[in-house]
Image (cartoon, rainbow, N blue to C red; front, side, top):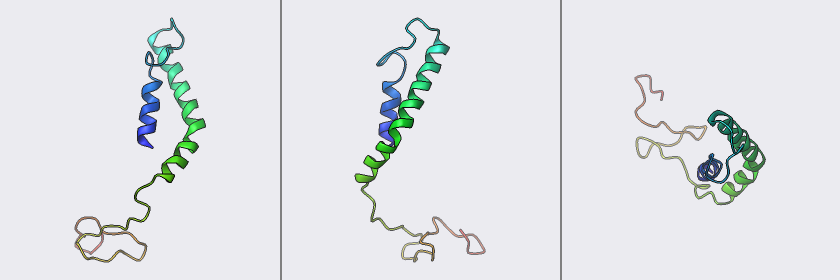
Length: 89
């Protein structure tokens, strides 16, 4: 998903694919491209999320607990790092 957003941002950078308005100041061109990016992202992010979920590689991954061998908590979370003096993460 992040790569798709980065690619979209790159393509919609002023001067890469197009520059709107053609003879506008830097501020006007940047603002116009920000609006174009926001609109394209708004209308395409659901499709991109669905595609990303189809190709998710870690759907069945289980949490890695620290220290090794420690069972996950009741809610499925793990303490990453060392617990403090009270035993809380």
